[in-house]
Length: 334
Image (tube, rainbow, N blue to C red; front, side, top):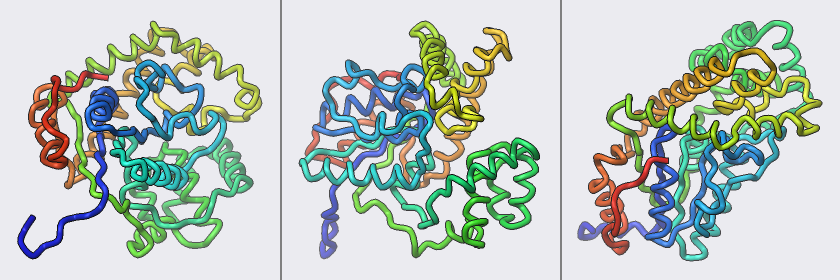
């Protein structure tokens, strides 16, 4: 502590971020065991019940009795916004701190991390009727046409939303039609943002060699297939609410990588080899987008989960000196 400068008295938390298949889950479990922590999942697929194998959701055995939060909180047909996640995650974190435990925030969903750590501008709640009209319009005109419409009313939002990102196009148009105010205006008002009132160490796990990450992604997907991923998707297809949904693949849960490709394969749209190749490619593209977002987190520390294991643990010890040094090796790939 610098003389005359008060110590930061806020509670502490550790955020473990990284692209898919980088080893976040294993490292979060290791820290939770060693530091007496509880894990808050920051993953937009793990919130859904029934998305287990394909979402790499840790099993009850893998959790080893460590409390986990924000897993299995919605059904696959139910919407779930970043604002809802942030509110529920903050409530979970408050409970963890009240119990004298360390919150460990682990996941790869950038929007969820942003909403949780920095806050989101308050916007109107979702309007199911208006959303249904926008989706129906998209079926006739296509999402590219609706993106062009968005560019007319909110060029700033359209510039950062891809023409095929149906969920974000839908939300941006919904907000504008409900309020007459572009979503970019709502989002840029810094006065409406409230950050997480904790002292947070941001750790990014990312293999230095992109080829290593690609190999992990491929191996993990093949392991998912062997574990019964397609049977899991067949079970989802049998859920009455998904069977009766007019466009199930437009639901956020089924836009998770792997699930859309498996659904289309079970529809007979692709061969099994095409399904595997498309799912692995989609996962690699997700990892690329995650890495792009993570590189913009200037206050985060980036480590190769294997090559930088000693430095990674040293960073934790420097942040929480009373935790002591690590007793084991580096994090395993998850």
